[in-house]
Length: 111
Image 1 (spheres, helix red, strand yellow):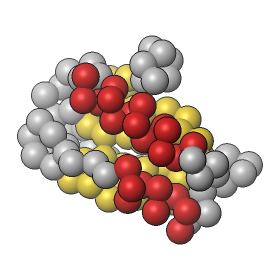
Image 2 (cartoon, rainbow, N blue to C red; image 1 turned 90 degrees about the vertical axis):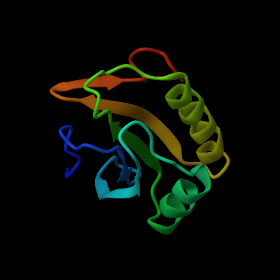
Image 3 (tube, helix red, strand yellow; image 1 turned 45 degrees about the vertical axis):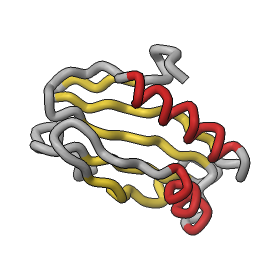
């Protein structure tokens, strides 16, 4: 995985898995600024379908070093989960990387 928690800008990555939860690919399709990245669910759905993924992990870093989900992170995750479900792709988790800390939104029940 290339995502580096020490980056000075946000990067959003996708871990794409097949029906046996084997890795298909890891991509970083979205790059942002120091405190936000524009992420487009439509593009994630297109990528998942193009790569024939059955499930997806979303991951992004917080350059601030704070491993907490913002209201925007939670809203995006819920929206993305719904969009992917329409095409039978499952969003398994959304990880937030901040320094050495990784937050699992699924473990926290945030989506």
